[in-house]
Image (tube, rainbow, N blue to C red; front, side, top):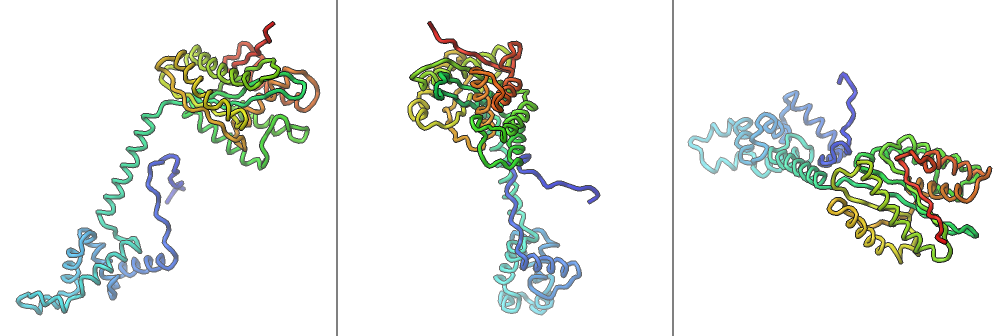
Length: 367
């Protein structure tokens, strides 16, 4: 080849049928030796003769009878010539049909040479079926609006409840950017999950670097943050904030002209066993009802998902945004966390009223 050719990427052709495993060393050596012998017209063995017939006469690749007829006429013409007239008893002198058939299967199946047209047709049909199923699945799939949300609750004497994160306006278009951020995250070698609460002086650069990666791919992202001063029953307040934040975000997208077609809404939150056992199913029901009321016939809501944060890069981003939002609201200082909170505000635009890529609100306590 004059130029380097990259191997086909599975993600570019996800319908491509899986490649066969490589031959083991012994079979690979037999295959190479058989091809070399055919090229040099060395036709002493059954394998060499059968391979020669399969190579020269494609119609023999799917029929033992066609193979035997060609084989006998080519390599045992002297036997046929002696029998005048031809009788079935000639089969006692000709090489056996079952031997030639078994040799054909060894050449085609084990050495993968001169495969039959039927095998080719089946492989082509399988690939076409995979392609049609792939296109049909993607054609019928609604574009997806995806939320990654995290909560921040009462801590000690801080009477504060908030929900924050990101909204991906069109996940199909943004998925490549998510993959790039996740790949960058993986290359950093940080084994532990990024938590705002654990960002000391030795780790604050990690959170800031992750936010910077997100800021570089800001187009297509809506930053979200709602909070409320609360005391006592914070789980109920948090439940209400989740619903209100998602619905208001969808209204914001509609106002910005981003909901021109039917879409699916998917909400992913950090798993919290206590909260999820009480509210997760109800959250899906209430959210579906609210969306159906506000956007009749336009949006469909998938069940809310509670996912362990681990190293899920967008849940880590949601954690940083929620933690930074709380830190900024409760006081400013010179602690490393305050610097990280400043980075959160700069990236999200929460304090910039003209920023259409941010939805931020503090619900003042009623008097």
